[in-house]
Image (cartoon, rainbow, N blue to C red):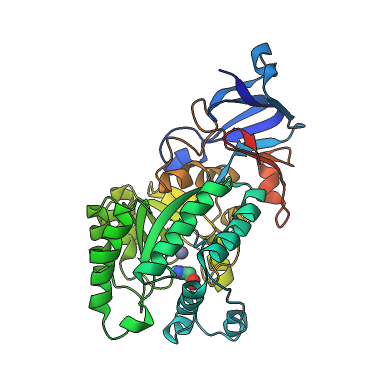
Length: 412
Ligand code: IZC
Ligand code: ZN
């Protein structure tokens, strides 16, 4: 096969390996090669990864890139974002600094509900343009695949609009997108006195329509005090599963009301946030094969404690790290920033975090067979860093050390 891209003179190639999430000690057991090269074929998949002299046949590649002795890793996978939204919420910063809790702002009709109002008002085109701008910033920071949730519509029309924006963005720019339906992100104001009716609407009208139009791959619920109870979460996620949408759960972000236990019981593909997860939640996720998607930049921004990543890894729960990019609790879209925080605050090693932001994140969005590691047959999604080794990108924080990014062997 003709070679689309050859990257040579790689000082260090660092990658997890395999086609499923790594758990326990495996999470830190990555493959590190020195003086390496990687070649991507015309179909966008990796055809060879090696060390030493590059074989003559590969040198005829359409494009040859000199990594100048730098680090190469798989393209980063951001497994939790709220990419599509109208407006911003910078006015909440002053409230936050005065100590007003996140859930109080929501209970007063602000927070998520203010973003809902702005998202309902925004046109499809405006949302596409704004989301693509965020995606191009993510790409420049090494993200080549990104999960994106709906959840700022809270009515059928606007939830579908958000999901169609995600679909459109996936077609017109390089970052690959995985859409998640999050119609149960908050109780909309018009259903304030009628929660059961909203849950019914999500289960019986929204989920079937989203599944029928193939607009999402997963179904998620914000299981939280004052938002959706564990019982409501179960009802909604079970409806999603019946319609072919595997479950994800926003669990234990502020209060531990049973979200992580439920995630394990339903064999959810992931449970996300997990800031205050109890032992029973960790045990349940381990048993259910659920990936823990941890969001350290949110703990940082909300000034909360940090998830029990080491306890989760010790219990054989695969850990992923993502940004949680959204206009309220985490207006940051840099996955390297979240990776740095994971290293410093979760006490994860650089190797464990690399797996968390690549292969385990890919598993959290059902793509571990295609992306998340640099191995023959996987997609040629990779990052060339302005760094001599893996430790370096964890040691230098607050700078963008990404030099070049390729998606399916095409430099972006
Ligand atoms: O807009 O505040 N936690 N959902 C659940 C969020 C944070 C996003 C937001
Ligand atoms: Zn979220």
